[in-house]
Length: 106
Image 1 (cartoon, one colour):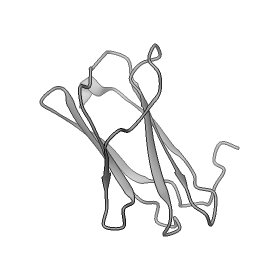
Image 2 (cartoon, rainbow, N blue to C red):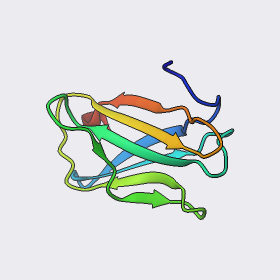
Image 3 (cartoon, rainbow, N blue to C red):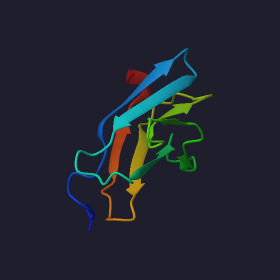
Image 4 (cartoon, rainbow, N blue to C red):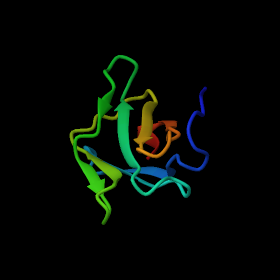
């Protein structure tokens, strides 16, 4: 199922900001009903022609939970970039979050 996982466990308030043309920060908040041990992982694909890549430099909160990502050497194309954040927990399945974003608009 598309929305498999515990309701309310997907991330919230996902947003990305581009700095100095080549740097991009994406951040999010943990799902309000996500178990405390939930860890999130961000994958993105800049265009249909490129491979999907996992974040290389996570931003962590005080509990060492991934709450954002810093991307370097970002190239901004005309296609929408695809972002996927999934999570894992020993207690339950975690819903994923995905979004297509026009990087040139941010």
